[in-house]
Length: 409
Image 1 (cartoon, rainbow, N blue to C red):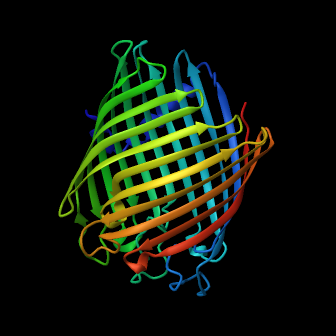
Image 2 (cartoon, rainbow, N blue to C red; image 1 turned 135 degrees about the vertical axis):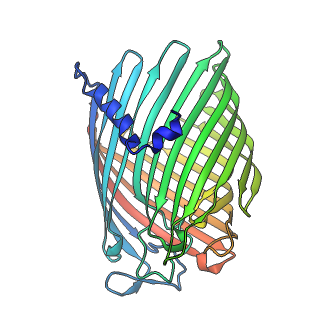
Image 3 (cartoon, helix red, strand yellow; image 1 turned 180 degrees about the vertical axis):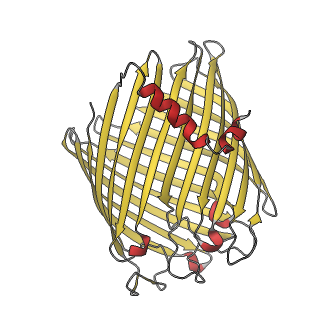
């Protein structure tokens, strides 16, 4: 029985969690660490739904507005159990979101991962894992609020994935790597943007590990997706399968004790009905710790990714810079700026297909470790999209503060 068939079985979602729980709660009852955590966060967004300034939407009371206030409550537990060189883990995080004005968007979220980091021999090791995530899709990824729908769709996406990876140290200089995965993502209630996407992945690679300063290697990542637009208003569902193959070379180099360079260069070929795309892709990141307290990074990135809400893809080219500063052990500050150009492509007729966007974003964060287990984090975020289709223009200012308790052993 192959991995894909096993995952499609009705009981597949429980297999890996059951194995992990058995290992954690086995006869020895020996748990290395248990970490409960909780979070409360307040956030104000000047343009919650990320729509043009001249297109406010009706909140739960019928008032046209752009802004809203959000309260998030979250809590969960992380468990790690180690035996010999192996580790079993389970992480959970439950969230509740409460909006002051757009209360029709109130929802619960959940994220969880479980799996095993295993070591068979000194040369052979790997991971088997499962992840589940129920969350509200960011409105920057939603292409438009469908005017034919009553009210505002909630854009609740559920995503599940299972992954098996392994590596083999062929000698002191080279390591072989492989991974296979199956994932399911679903957005059921967003009108024409609804989708049901099942994707399989196979990755093979070889990496040079013979230097303490340099790690480099080649990989091939092949994915096949079954992307289905869910039926709307009695119309039959449309199917839009795709395949994506990424050929990539990567390098990580430690220039000195405070400077690292990470880079990739590759080629992505994507085949999809009436929407084939190919592109040279890659990334370059330069990190430098100027002093013990201060560091910065520079980054350039070009990617070709799925854009499920248009049943297609997006080609993104971006540049970013950021700085971090830690004046004391309890206080750290960071700020970053990113600018990108995105080409969105998908089947003709779907809202948001085939357009060019320019996006800008800026972030500022402060973290204050009030106690060993308590962190207070005020933050600010600015986003702006200038699209050749004016229906997708927006700008928003977001500020908030989070209080997190994390009880490490």
